[in-house]
Structures are given as C-alpha cells and as structure tokens.
Amino acid sequence: MKRLILAAALAASLNAYAAEKLAVTVQHDLSIARPSETISIPWRDVNAALPGALIQKIAVKDAKGRVLPFQVTNVAPLAKDPKNEGIAYGELLFQHSFAPGEKSASFTVEKIDTVAPVFPTKAYARYVQERLDDFAWENDKVAHRTYGPALAAPAPPGVTKEVLVTSGLDLWFKRVPYPIVDRWYNKGHDHYHTDQGEGMDMYQVGKSRGAGGTGVWDGKQLYTSVNYASWKVLANGPVRAVFELHYAAWDAAGKPVSEIKRFTVDAGHYLDRIDSTFQYEGNEPITVAVGLNKNPSDKGQDPVITVKREGPVLLQWIEQKTNGAMGIAVVLPGAEGFTQDNLNELILAKASSGKPVRYYAGGAWSRAGEITSLAQWQRLAQDTAARAANPVRVTLARKQ
Image 1 (cartoon, rainbow, N blue to C red):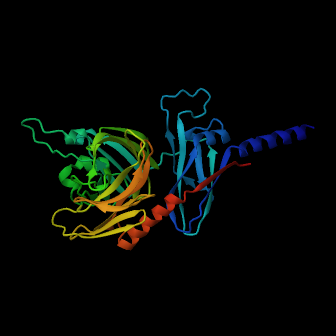
Image 2: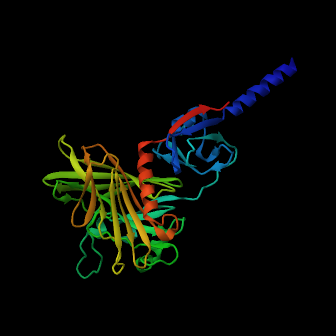
Image 3: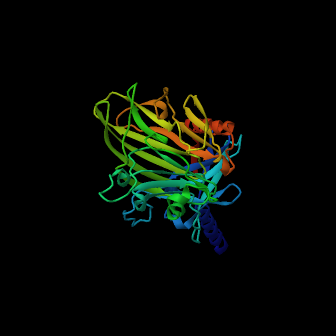
C-alpha cells in the first residue's frame, strides 16, 4: 500500500512538472524564407498554462532545446499584481528564422528555477533631448531618427542653432549589429556624417518625406505635418521596440488633419512596421501618401537612382560615387497607385478617420554586406509584402 501511495505521489509530481510547459506551434503557408519572424503570445495565455510564471523565471526553447532570446512587453507598469498573474504584462515575444520551405516550427515556454539571462538589446528607441528633441530608433540592421519641436523653433537673438521644419524620416546606415544611437550622438554631428567603421548618416531629408514620411494628397498637392509634437515609448527591446509620435493638426486642403504614428521595430528587419492613424472631421475617406525623397544622397555623390513601382512596393536603389549603394523602400498593403511631386516619390492609399493605415519603411546599405544589389532589395521588399499578407499562425497547448 505504501508503495502504491508513493507511486501515485510520484506520478502526480511528474504530471505537475510536465504541465509547467507551454507547447507552441507556429505555421505559415509561404515557401519563401522568413528571417527573424517575431512570434507573439498574449501573456494571459502564458499565465493560463503556467500559473504564477514570472518573466525572470521562464525559458523559451526551440525544438532542439536551445534557449531563445525573449521579451515580455509591459502594458500597465503601475498595476498591482497580488495574485502573481502578470497583470502588467502584454505579450511574450521571441523570434524564429524560417528557412525556405519550412512551414512549421515548434517551441516550448517553461518555468525555470534560475534567473533567465539578460539578452542583448537588438531594438531600441529613445527621445534625444540633448540634440534638439530628435527621436531616434534602431535595430541590428539600420537606425533612424526624426525631428522634434526644438529643431523647428527659430533661433533666439544672438544664438546660432540649426532650424529644420519637417516630419520626414531620416536613415542612419549601420555596418555593425550592436546599438549605435547613443554612441553616435556622443561622437557628435561631424563624426557620424563620416564612416569611421560603424556606418554613417549620409541620408538627406530636408523638406522631403525622407524614408517613409506621410502626407495628405488632394490629387495635385501634398499637404504635410511639421515636426512631431509629442512621443511615447511603449516597449524597448531586446526583440522589439514600440513607440508613438504624435503630430499636431495641419491644414490639408482646408481640412484639419492630425496623425499618430506607431512604429514597431523588430530585430533582424530592414523595414519597420508603421501604423499611421489620421484624425479629421467627417466620414469621407482621404487619400494619404507615403513618400521617399527623390534626391537623398550627399552632395558630390552623383547618384544613379533606380525607382521601382509595383503593386504595394515603392523602392529606390541608389548607386553613389564614393558611399556605396543604398536601398530605400516603402511597402504599403492596399496601395492604390503612385504619383510624385517636386521632392518625393509617392505611393497612395485611402484612409478613414481613426483607422490606422499600415505600411513598412526602411533601408539597407551595400557596405553592411547583406543587401548589395537592386535584385536583392527588390526581393526583400516583395517578401515583406508577402509576409504582411500571410501572417504566421500560433497554436498553444499545455505539454503533458
């Protein structure tokens, strides 16, 4: 009898341990590779399978048992959590690179006794007060910045300062996978405009849309906002950074329009996901445009610029005299055509007040060594469009 009781207790113990795992299956229908696919699981589902789980006491493992970097977003940092349910948490994020033809992958989320390691940050965003209200962001592939109120403000009497009024998006091209935003701001303006081994800021924005800025198109003219008015960081690495930029209302052919842009910056991606929500009075849709600067190279580079317009993709491949080649692209699902003005190549779509328009924007540099030809850049943009139209499917099960 004692042996039976002991065996039953051992079985119950083993079953309890086995239930401390969440099995995750991720599937998709494309035959292309999907590098750095970000997999998202609501934390409420993790807690349901692993009651009392803590972000510092879990591990995410692939089918071979390898521990993967992960992130848990924080949606309510002031929330009290007396039942240890992770009320403040939003999503569990981790990544997998699907090889061509690989359409399914399996993972486990497990409770562990030790403290989970701190993973290297590959996605990062911050407000840069020390550089006239810049807002900067990056991942392991490319960096960006855009411009705030202090840069737009006139210089006080007797003070010399840069003045630029624009809501265009800038690009900083990297040759290294580690974070460089803080390092480059620390080096200063004259240094990050030359390549000293980590990359350089060689992209010109000015009054243009830069690399993926937006505006309202009335059929003849583009109406744009000025520098962002406020910002909010929602998540900050190691896998994903999320932030919002708010743009005050501007006149769009007699209609006041405001905008909130939400950026989702994932490790391993050349193009960021951007959700632009326009607000205005009335129910009629408006036409919005996403733009690329027609002339983004530094002076003296004598660029040869190739522009491709196909379906949801607007891209440039820019061969420069001494600074290598750069690819810039916008992918706009649901695009309804293309146009241009004096400054910008434009791709168009309809938008309704309060409903986000999703698109993808970014760039790559030949000297980083991964994207070195127009054909490669076209393939990446088209694959981005295909991935956006065919998201992965995530299935969860308690593992016994």
